[in-house]
Every structure is written in structure tokens, then in C-alpha cells.
Amino acid sequence: MSSLEPPGEAGEPGGVAPVVPPRRRTVLWSAIGAAVVAAVLVAVIASAQPSSQVMGQSPLLGKPAPAVSGPGLAGGHYSLAQFKGRWVLVNFMATWCQPCQAEMPQLVKFSRQHAGKGDAMVLTVADDPSNVGQLRNFLRARGADWPAVDDPEATVAYGLTGLPSSFLVAPDGTVYAYLLGQVNATELDGWLRQGAAKGFGPA
Image 1: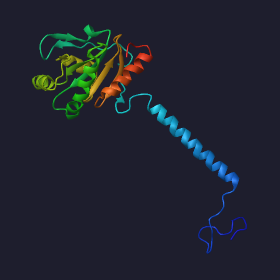
Image 2: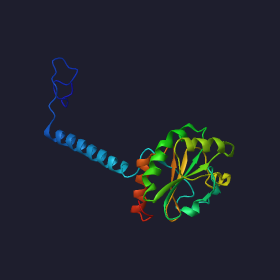
Image 3: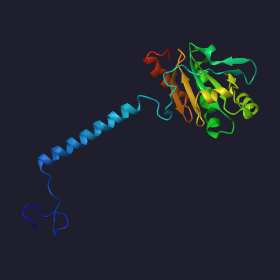
Image 4: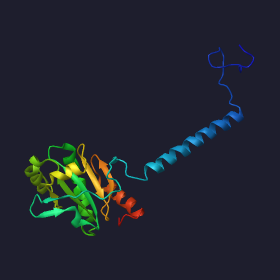
């Protein structure tokens, strides 16, 4: 055994647990403290923006939202431009998309929470022209009373690569966020508050 090794190290017969010198204990507690602080910082950063929705990359971010215009699935004619002045969640949907169906209760919740104030709304765009009839019935059956349009050109203009896909358009008409995956009403409100804090409009 080297003279530098403390007697009774683990693995030696009759060995006892070594006593940690005060200096080593100080370093140990400092390391633990630093780890705790780092964990708190990570938690704070993570809570600063919605978590379950993924902020997707899109060349449209910060730019004027492409036009959305077409016949309403339940009648009439709608365009994104007519809703300028409020937050608009442009939500692309098809009934064969299971996650799209699963997010519907959250869309309904978000829409109803803001219907009274008129500060935010949902605008559904049919992603599949052959699915328009089924989508109309699906929305009606689930109480989705917001505008829904058939505009095949919008799918191309927004550069969709999959569903669910939603674009949060600010009151000034710019694309504030591209959300991949199922939306959540509470987290959508988080995006609105975040946008309002940055001067994009009311939350």
C-alpha cells in the first residue's frame, strides 16, 4: 500500500469509511449548490415559454402572413385579412389526421375563451381538398363555430410538411409563431402573453 493512501480504504480487510476532510466537504457542497442553481435556472428558462408545443422553423416567421381566402365550409366566404387586429391561429386540418382530431377540444376551449373579448380566434384551413365534406361534418359535430375555409393554395404558401400545423398570426398580420404538433389552449394563451409583452398586440 502506498504511503499516500489513507489506511482502511474500501476493499481492505477491517477498513472503515474514510473521513472526508473539511476542505473536500466544502468543495462537495459547493458542487451540489452549483448543480441546484443550474437546475433552477433550467426550470425558469423552460417555463418562460410554452413547452408541449414545438416552435417550428419557418421562413415566414416575422413576415406578413400569406393570404388565406376561400369559401367557408359551412357557407359564406372568409379571408385572413378580414380578421386583422386580433390574434389568429391559422390551423391546417384533415379528418384523417388523428392528432388533428385529438387537439380539437383544445381548439374549442381556446376559441370559446376568447370569443367574448374578440382578441383571438381560430381559422381552420382544409389541408386536403378531397376531405372538405368530412371536415365540415367533423367541425360541426364538435361545436367548432369558427371560420373554416377551403383554400388549396394556402397549404403551398405556408410550406406545410405535415399535420398538425398551426401558425399564430399577430394582430398586425405578421407570423409570430409556427407550432408543430397538437396545440394546447393554456399554452396558446402563453404565446399570446409572450407576444403582447414584445409589443405584438393584446393578450
